[in-house]
Length: 225
Length: 264
Image (tube, rainbow over all chains, first blue to last red):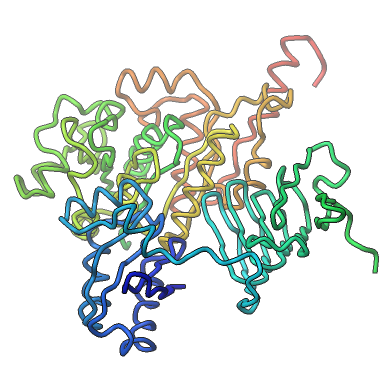
């Protein structure tokens, strides 16, 4: 979902998710306006498109459906995708420089951060290139394909095949776990540790619980209940 | 019938998007539908060559979207098959010569006149792909049974799902039954297990495809090769007929049985 963060260097930062459809995105902008219009009126804002691939038509839609109604002042745009950067350049739009990005991007959360969001329950498959980032626990009812990534502050539970990258405790919490109905990923990360798993492992293609014990990443089967 | 706009895409390059677009367009036209194939690969056009229409190009997709010509001036009618048309693209321009909105408008205009619009997408996931897919209702994803191609196909399927294209169906191209039997190539089920999409068809690796591409004669114009039959079957499935998937493996076993004199 769209997040409004900031106020570093006097700027709000509007972080736009890259993994939802254009229609969902515009619906979320409408919701942001409904909830935060007073906050945005007259304020300077950076629109951070992250690694979303987009064309001039989406820029125009965001302008009409979000920037104009809220009366905010767009200080610049940020994006990580090269073709989208070219699109912004061709429109003559101000792109946030790397220096400005360092000043305005939210600071990474400290390792001991205690605030979390409620867990997210995602139904469906995560395909290669898709990322799910959440400030809490994540449960996936589906598969995580090779090339997909989950980064969760808390536990990660995949009720399907885990072939992509799962990083539980991504802010440095080594006490959480990754659970998979079928473990088929060669690397799992927990907190500050990364565990490599070989396809010849007894746990490959089996239900597995991955956690840290004695400073090492350990894989075990699902407990018998 | 309502027009169906289908993007043919893959992610990975060289897996058979253009060949598939040309053959399906010809096969659907032979079934009696009015079909236009659009080359979405601005700057690297090939669809005109595969369809054998490169000598008849006067105007291109870019001329249409820039307003240099009318739409019907860019439409090249194939003289071999009734109701088959091509809109070629420009070789001398680049992918940013056309915008998503322009492709959307073009698709809406073509929707009024044709039964099928097949859009040959360029490789990759950038604006070329995005512009080719934006006006489409549904998608055909092409892959070969190789890990790299399947991974790229998965990425593309994710993007198509986020663009709300439906249905998204898979064609597995260049299957070599002998290699599958030896465990050296992914089989159909392996690919389907990875990609979790519906299969539209499988096409065997066939020398006739190379010959047809060089001659500019789509196989479905009249060839009786296995690949021609596969493409013809795929076109039938597109229009809703129930056609069993070609069983390449029993035919392959028969060949080897004859070669080594074993009983079937």
